[in-house]
Image 1 (cartoon, one colour):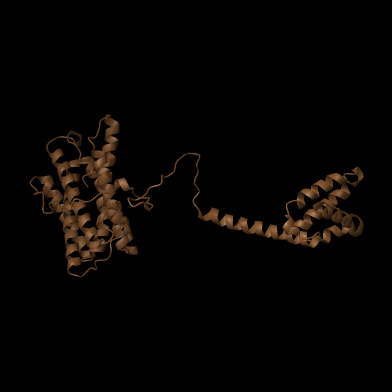
Image 2 (image 1 turned 90 degrees about the vertical axis):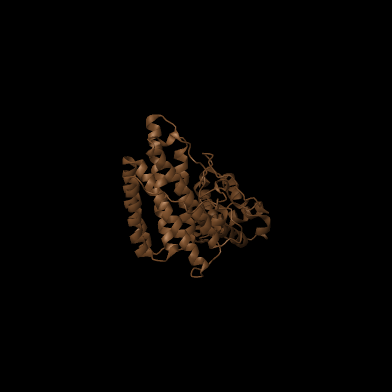
Length: 355
């Protein structure tokens, strides 16, 4: 059928319409193919290249299936080719949209995240932490512990933290959700600064850190997860975000300089900050128990991170966060005590996994 169609098209192009009419056949892709082929035939007529044109036109029309041809009419051939062209353009446009919205992953480097699932077989939805980084908080920790300041540095650290609490109380008052969000943006700084400086010290002196680099970075990561949880519960306003930028910029640089001058003082201040955090979350729980703050369902990220039951509530989340803060309190007071004894942190084993 294709051979008969080609012959009829060639006869029509050469003997009936002529070369001048080939420019007016159609603007569609199929007619353009015929027009181009006819003009090529006329140009090559002197060399009698008839069979070359025949093979060229045949190869163009073979892409059209027999069902699309239906009959040997050129109109149906043109319609079929136009339909194919429109479908191809549609597919290209759809493919282009997919390429723009999808994430491009290169397999050249062999880097890809393995398939991770929960214990029940469902897909692990979080990229910010993995199942092996989750844990059950030890809520039996003594919340009433307090380091009584005795030395000058201890008293200076204690009074500094009390002074820092004044503007916090004035700004947030009893909005404990916003207060906790701001607190976590600050609380995640000391562990990162201490871990970074210990890391650089280890590189300079070719010494092990006794596990303290990992312990302090673990603390910073845990505090950051507190923040990620609180952001799910409290959507910060623009001025609160601006306050975070200001406070973090000032506190990071001040704590960095302090840790260089006196790690003992830096850890003591952090310990007292964590004591204040325990107090703030205790007041938060009182507000929930009194009904002033609604005990909403726990965010999904908190349920997976602390391995909470599926029906966990805000109160359960605050309880485990408060337990974490109590652990950080103990770790930093412990680190300050090590320095107070004239030793380095690497001389005492770090409490790894002691959130």
